[in-house]
Image (tube, rainbow, N blue to C red):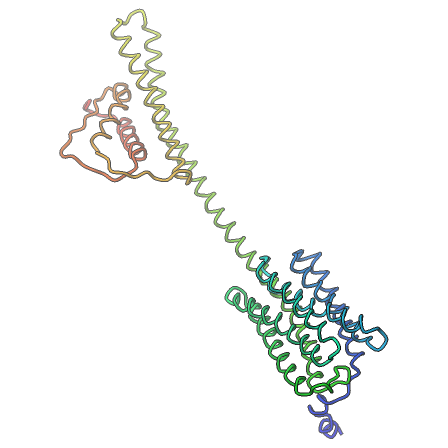
Amino acid sequence: MPLTFWNNWNLENLINMNIDYPTILLFLALNNLFIIALFTYQYFYHHKKWYFSVFILGIIFQTIALTLVANRNVLPFLYSVQISNLFLISSFALTSFGLVSFDGKIRKNVLWIFLVFTFIFYSLFLTVADNSTIRIIIQIFASSFFYGIGAFYLFINKKKYKFAIILSIVLFTYSIFQLVRAAIIQQIGQSYDFMKGSSIDNWYLIISVFVISASSIGLIMLLKEIDQKTILINNAIIQRDKLKLEELNLTKDKLFSIIAHDLRSPFNHILGFSALLIENIKEYEIAKSEEYLGIIKSSAQNTLTLLDNLLNWAKSQTGQIKLNSKKIILSSIINEIIKQSNSIAIAKQISLMYEQAEEIELYADVDILKTVLRNLIGKTAEVDHPSPE
């Protein structure tokens, strides 16, 4: 019995079966209402994006058109044909534009193309409104045109998102099918009537349900894929900022260490010579006092220069300034640093000497080189020396 039933209920019977088209169209309208409810929920609770609302509006227009066409026997020609097809052609443009705008970009060129061709297709439709075959073909060409453009723009984003290529294939296949359907209807001629049903229209209804459902689900999955990529990008940014913050903390600690070392010694010298001068101001000769005052002044100036250089170094480490490397004469820099460090040498009762063997040129940042040399002299001065030189 099951085998006999299957032999009788083959694919040919399925294709050629009689379908109550008004009822089927109302069923499609109800299916669209479910999709509208699903997308409305997605819009308010997950993806409150403008292109989502455009896609929803397209489905609403399509639902209105299906309802008007399904009631063609009870509604006047103006509503069941002219107004219904205005909604239908507009729905093709809106749903396709909503799909191609999945990344949030407003493609103005595409928008203008859709607006112009919506007007062109509907104007052509009105001029042949009395010819049912031609107006159906115009409607089919409009559907194929808008979904074909949607397929193209989704296809060029296939490398970024895998669901873009899936949606592109669905829309492209539907566009080709619509062109085949238009060719078959053209061969049927004036005797064609959509409501009477035909094999190609049976396939059209079946494929349309699939395309509407696949496009809706595909768009949701595409947006989910975009969200996942956005999360990955944000996590990468957070990780990068975390590493940068750790580097800044290390730079801060290093800066404090250098400041503690490089600035503490000069200030101690200033305080030490100031204390000696205050305690022995009456006993020291004028020349001796002037010598100490000169050392204090020199130490203060050198300390200010040191502080500026340290701040510049800190900025270079945090990326606020770039290294300013240039050709410099090493001996001139060394002599300058020795002169600036003279107060340290006097306090330690040592002499700083530089014997130049040959002229050396370097390609380096002057401020950083000075900081390195000061650190070397400071570390050397801390060590007890058997010789004052």
